[in-house]
Length: 256
Ligand code: 0WE
Image (tube, rainbow, N blue to C red):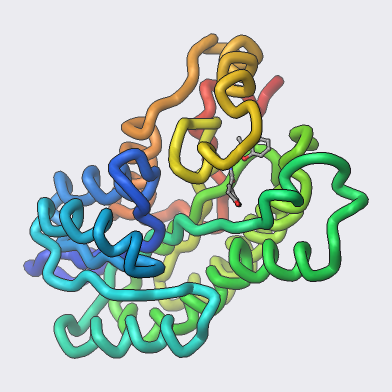
């Protein structure tokens, strides 16, 4: 028995593509290979010019503006999708944000506003996005978000993002419990460090990448393709009994 619409192309909403290095883009490409039809969003005009050509290269019909921090914009995306499609089979949430000054120095110095912003954009946005998608997921489906080891361990300087990712992983469990009866699965993919636009804003990231490599059992860093493969698996029926979990693609770093 299929938990998604039989005999029709599956539809996936991808939120968080910034450029060709984005983890969201890696997952989108793998989903496209699996036969999914894709919908993309971009956060502002600057990003639109990067996302649109990528999205069009995979035949996307809908490429919509969405600041995930806004209930109205999230609802707008769902309204636009509803005009074109009856169901949504997969949702990829690949969004995080903290103020740059909160990703260095001491965690204890995090301001109330910096904490609120990081938790709102990086964790609560999954809850609000999931709620908005529910009416389109009557056939069940899969919701996937991206996390990082700093949710479960102290990674120096990850600071408030570690707290936000811990909240995100807990949101995944509570959402999975709520939505299980509707056959909607909710999971997190915890990726090792990769050079993306998000990482480009991190002080000394190149040095961190080199150091991270030596601390993994496999002694090599992961690639975008690794994230694409696991992400697409979690979104597919192959993972139909996998929910509420955080799966690592990190060359084993989390066992150290
Ligand atoms: O989750 C992340 C980073 C997400 C992120 C990146 C930025 C850069 C630009 C969130 N907010 C911002 N805000 C900005 O202004 N990663 C997993 C990558 C990352 O970030 C680190 C890491 C790793 C790895 C920060 C400190 C230490 C390690």
